[in-house]
Length: 289
Image (cartoon, rainbow, N blue to C red):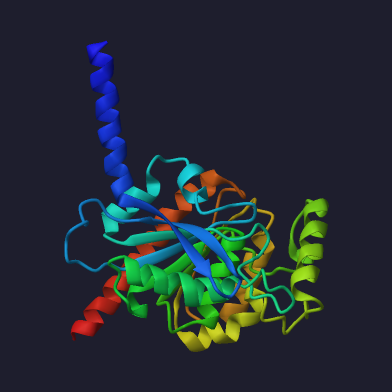
């Protein structure tokens, strides 16, 4: 019994230590008149130190929430280990299931581009020890979150120095998706409700990543895009890759074995963090020159 009590005590101490590095915040959105949760992961040992760190926003996919990247990855404490390794602050926001991080022209309850860019980021910068400069801020995400990361970065180059997508919906046109017709029809209907009639064919709507390639070129934001070869969104990623090649936008593009799974995203996130950290380091060196 004494051993059991000691074990429970140590577990409680351990959990308390972990909680000190991870905060769940609730941010009120004036744009949507509602509060949304996000999780902030800090490197171990920074509390109480006068130190400002880069920040990376990591977006979830459809049906997800602010805890997806914490509960569903296949390596325990993956985000914490990456925050510790690179000495960065990771933020995982939660949004509505099929919002795609849009600002809907039709629905006041779907204004997630505004929420991320004008409400969440200022809140995090005001309450956590972040470097409040675009050269130390990045955004990435999976699936729907990949779309959100690329879209928001393209529209807000004043906020980010790097953006990424893992298995992202680089074209919301469901005709470019492979298989699962029932899901495609559901997404098409939700797009109609949120966006109304938009241009799905070239030159594409600005509500989809492939319609923002000119902004991506002009902005000069470092881009990393990857997708599994067995992913149902592989063709949308190849399409964006080709458009970026045609307009000569520098970007990292990778296809690897894998599908639309947490096994794939668990492996992909460390590559994104390595890429983003290298961009941060380059910007830091240039600022010192």
